[in-house]
Length: 402
Image (tube, rainbow, N blue to C red; front, side, top):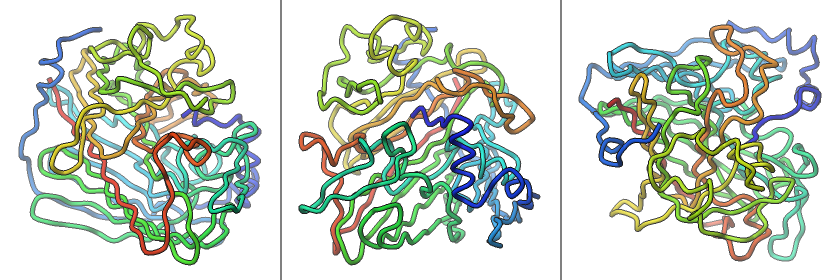
């Protein structure tokens, strides 16, 4: 997603959180390749599964925010209870040199005031809703707009700005954290009390699995949960992702208007710069004059995942490969779509982990999802959740080298 708010709008958001400049500071913070090569991702069993937590900071209203760090002896993941956020993903390259490949901050005030959703769990509704408005069972609901005239990622104070409850999850082959947040009826204008649990687990084969689970009480609602981790396989802050090679399992995509709202059309990628059916460098066509690239300032579009699901309901969404150091990511999901965002709105106006400025094209996001603005497009997959129903979804990021 552009997933970027202009600085003055970020500060307005901070104000909505009670985080003006002074208050925010008062937070206590402690190239092409062959498909068979792209598919050759190495995953091996590793060392002991371990996890620990420590205080990361405190919100102005006194809520403690913790960071949970878990490892399989090869990879290490750090996550915050603030926004159920992936802060760091430390993984080795083909020579065994480990580096953090996830964009983020080393302190809570920056997450609260500046973050363009770095690593956050997104809800109630990931991506955009046109004019922040939708109708369900004859009743029209209004979500606060925070992206031009549209609502983005759940409105002005989405799930990314909430402190989630955390519980350690450990099995013989995986370790991680289950995060839970209860969103009251009417929060950000959404109907029904929504209870969401999102479980992040790292297994011994370098798979980061995300399991989403939600139920609603009282009234039906709409739900579209995702995670907004930003990756750079060179290491965060180490240059652009334009030489990363991408292969997408997506024969179609949903074009957008000037406000990045889907037009309602679902069109083939064939013959366009959106065709990544063969491994292609992300930057190979990004500066072209295709109208959709101009509107998005690059890639910021929902792709329709193709193929048939396996016995677990999962399909390949895409593969990424960074040729210089050899890191790879393969993404599988049971969702119908994925938002591929090429970091177009990162502008170097703040410093991330390691005191590095993040600039345009310095990361990509790959958000598995239902389509943007689905409640306003009857031809899109339905995102309605009713009392008595259970929302379930799974996405797996598999890390490796080649």
